[in-house]
Image 1 (cartoon, helix red, strand yellow):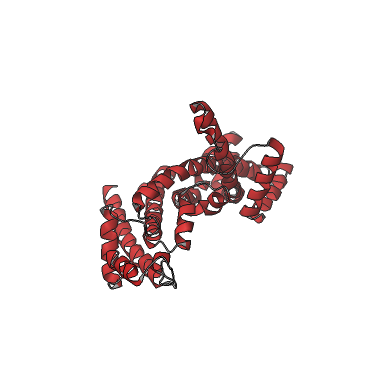
Image 2: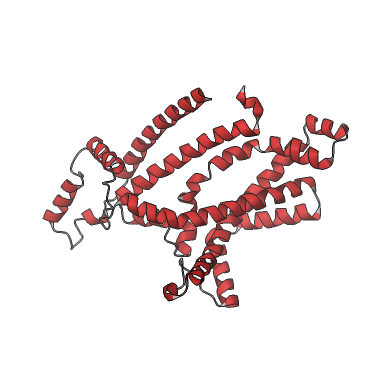
Length: 319
């Protein structure tokens, strides 16, 4: 176990190193320049542009820029080119905003997908299976931004309540409980929107995996021995059907950044996805590279968690 963890940690550190190099090269070799360094910007004289390049090491080769950037990143000195604020501080503030969306959306997705998928598999061809299949493909087919606008129009017209942003304008002078309930309300709609597509896709995976496992010989043998149906379905079949979802569960961590761009943009939610999108538009390289690096770290952490969960789901892997 310890040797496995050690080997896995070394492999992931090497992978992270190469990911940092590739992402750095892609960002700097892409066409365009940072908005602040654009010589056509009338706010910047040639002297200011040259001083900016020198301060952020843009006048040096890419290899030197790479070393300077990650030195500043790991020492907490990296600042945004857009507003000269600490990148890590900005990301931490946006991370705290995105975390509730991520947690609520993930809980909704995983707690609803499995009951729907399992029941569809056990009642294959029945009314519930047909209805859930139709609804799943409908949710998959509808673009997220269109569904978001439909939800916003419906809620605003029917309930006459605001849904944009993290809180209602002017509510800061009210009681803490009122502000808390207002925050919960503003959190509900984007969380539901972020979970709908995940529930539709994941429930289909659960259904297909359960159908495949239910047809295995050991499941038929368990039925032939007279075991109760619930024990056959949930102890023998479901546990073996969980293996592919262990991998999927480990890969939900990057969704904390990339999976929330559309939702946060539509609902004006100041989270990490929206910050990354705005940084790309502004050519804010420090923010883009830092977010990209954090995304890579989350992917590697997720795969490592998946490896450990395999030991829990399938005891044979311990051998």
